[in-house]
Image (cartoon, rainbow, N blue to C red; front, side):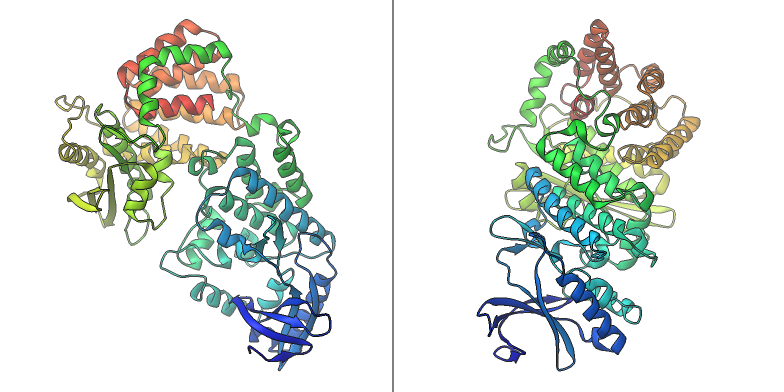
Length: 600
């Protein structure tokens, strides 16, 4: 093809290709300008109807005139293969710009606004993109967004070849490794995944996925096959973006949640609404966003200045120690530092994610009570979940000297848990162990792992000589699942979490962590505008009372009670509980995280 002439265009070089066709750089012999010539797949020319549909869609796309839309100059057929001629763009694809890393929030908003503006123009002309994804979005050398391939998804994936096109996309160049979250399927709306009719709101969902990926470096729904992607898109809720990238503000999180509603009637109804919210947020006019303020920002979003000062005084030296433990990587730690990565679920059914995450989290909690250890917080550790990143690279990014990683594999009513401790300096394995247990005993293994890791790091666990209260493993398993669901935004997740917590408390009425998650659930409802603040605070306070009745030394409950009291103006009670939380667990990052959640 290189050097040949197609109509009046001389082909100069191959620029790239994928499921939507192959693109070449060419020279327009009549106008003397460089252009991009895109040949569509052979499937698109199998019938006269398909070819006419292509011409109709291409003509419609060529009528779009917008600074953020790639201009279509011409359309034709060469040796039976349809092609179109577009402007030749400099820069890079948005896919290459993201490259698995979160973009700065300001850039997310700027590019998102430009993409939304382009789609407003397209929808106004009756054109739905249907295949919006980073590979079809371009970032020019001037930092401007350009949308490519308008109207072509419907042409390529016409009814006769839709399944073949999907298979080609998933098995071809876009799926480079097992488990990679790549391909057109990853950006489909739920209605597309079901094979239902789509309208402009489908593009809104796809743009929500793109915005989420720009903000976090990760897809909101992940999988290694079309079936896994479809399951995530249709049933799963994405993890809060701020949990992956703490720089994501609450307003952007709300915008993402609304764009990613599975029911089209609950999403933004017009792209112009999404564009307006991105524009307002970028301009700092958060009070004008289309969401009620109570839904966008936690009701307890800012303590009164005197309460905030009280918190600082109450935390005192313990807070300073925590700040040192979370200090930037520019200061090398003088004490051993460790990150516990999310454990992998290697079960055939992939149904043990709650157990894998719960083991990692509880191991963090146990190790965080060791004064001689600097333990990386959950937010940073779990930002690597689902990613294939070298251990040394993770250690360097988090500035840790040790890494704990592991896996969970269930077979029938037994589970095999493996863990290893890796020294980051040379990626050498210092310790490893496997535990083969009945499923009901799995959640007791974290204590054994923590003790082994502590021995290897030559430190001792606080309270290791005491006898812990025996907890019914069934209650603990329900608690772990509820804790995960509590972190999700939708009301359905909070409802399910509360049901699980209540089941756990039916099994073990004195299980303090479950009561604590019940309190968290009500506060989360108020923060997300799902319950009145007064009622939520009352129910949360009752749950905190039950937590402390079951375990007077449960530090997170003291932290919650202190923040609630400070917000209510009871500064004496606030000081007492906040000081007690720090006294009980001065080195536990969970206490700081819970307080920060309520302050943020």
